[in-house]
Image 1 (cartoon, rainbow, N blue to C red):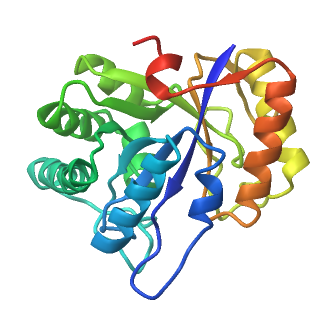
Image 2: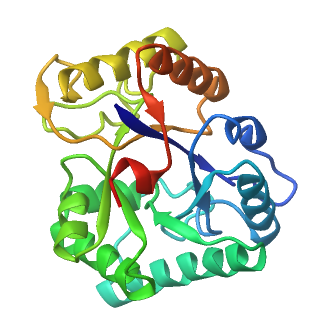
Length: 256
């Protein structure tokens, strides 16, 4: 019973601060670090990498659409070659900072609208997987369970980690309920824990309707920008450990 816990971090920008990164890095095992396109900047990236390494947390790149004002949550249309280059650019930047701090990237997890669209668009998913593979074939692609992005990673010959979301509700198709809908984001820590425990016990995604979609699950995401994220993460980890789950790094949980 091994599982990984991840969070989206490094999303501050200049004088503007978002999230409680240092506290979350004491709880999670994988950090998805913004690469400057939807959030983050070189100083924030370097500080987050340094803090994550000191906490023994695995480093991941969190590439996005070039959309600072919309926090990367607005869908865009990019030609495959442009998108591939944008992903390589962002992951490469974080890889360079990681190397400067004596670390190495473990995984890549797309952010926001880019991730959501790639979950349903096989061609876009293949473009992202191709970009990751071009950088380093040893990188793990973290992708939502049951998504086209997960399938694209496997087609590309990458190691793929199936992700579930602790604080988001699911549709019957296994996709995330849009944030515009009531109940899409779970804020209460007891509700978050119950949601995750239900999925782990059932062996798959449990939709808002109660429908079960069986799937492997390797990592649980707690969004760093969600109010109460630190409390949610701490309680989730504590209660799952009490239930017999062991929290480990991504490579250990996927068996590589």
